[in-house]
Length: 104
Image 1 (cartoon, rainbow, N blue to C red):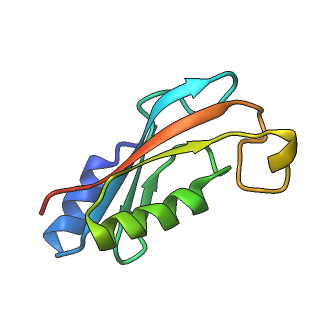
Image 2: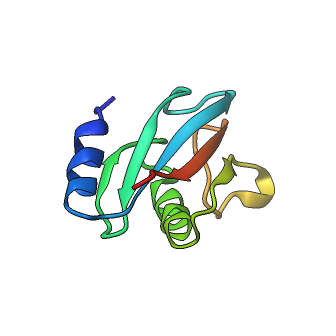
């Protein structure tokens, strides 16, 4: 996994707000393990990954909201027959992702 800390430090040093999304739970098959992280700046920068691309866009959007409100969120992504065309994991597993702002 790409180390996101240098990106976070650089973004913060340039005055950008930063949120970090971390995989905190995996059920079944998932592309990334617990601890995988995606850092997002309020300018739209990205570093790392929580799903190998399956739900990155949705997590990015949630991270932007976390940056706007300052309120952390616990997100759950998976796939069911009812969700087949929604955002989810094609591999059939489920992940929980905690998104939190980084203190300035």
